[in-house]
Length: 386
Image (tube, rainbow, N blue to C red; front, side, top):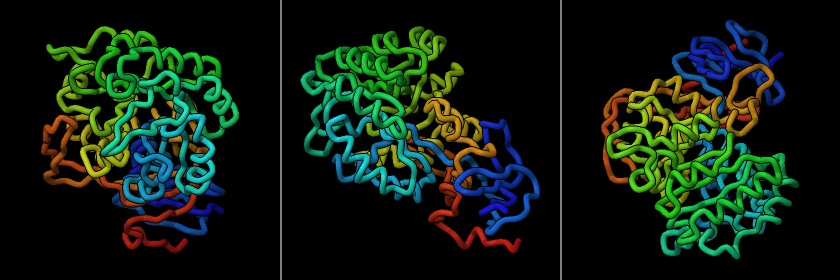
């Protein structure tokens, strides 16, 4: 007897190379059935006419709500945008990780994983009035503490985070990245590196990253764009992908441009993961949320299947946790119910360029840990008599 069956939806699960109508069942917080005409459940929900995907993973968020000025509420984000797993990317460092874990993560119903910042206090100076890059001062780097905390919290910490660039690290160049790479090597975890304006250059950063490491803000506008003025992909980008470096969008306040994205997609260069970099300074635009970021790629010609893959299966592999982002039997019992609306929708990037798209991905509800959880429109998904 299953706990819950979602019946009759269009199920898109790239982890199983599946796109078609069938049922998905959940029991004891995990996926317990995947097939046609599943029977025997305490609760059955009719999702025919809707899209069912593995629970969306946003690979770049800031959800240390109340502990940092940029943090948003992960549960509210899940309700509104269908993100069942928020991956916090460096809001906390070793100095304030215990507060993040105890006061936020352990109280959140939606899942939270984290990259731990090599800076002692994480991203502590990110606000409308105060903007201090935490990597400006190398005295704030805490490699020993970072390694200790990462080793002690492997259930939640998936990697090490560092931010470099003019805004994040001033004139320090690649020095913070050098320190963070040592920590990542010591604890055997991947590294996620933020890049903004030079110094350092996009190429300098890529040349230092290892297979499995992640460059976020990968489709930035000029300067430090991955595309050339002629619309080709920089050789260093192609070389990095060939050796296994991963590329994450991390839209945010200043890190996603339509011009860059058109050039990259025209050259067949799709990001590994689509993420919003949602925080207090971009949740009301230009990023808004995960489904809006996904919609921008849909409107730029990427198929719905590939957009879902970049927000589910690919994210699970980037996390080295394939039980995330999948509806395989035995995987985590998370699913997102979506629709794709037709019409005219105004999208904006970080440069102020607007795009009128004819499609918009909308989250209609979620299954979280095997249970029907805070759907926005419960009446649209009636219970079915078993």
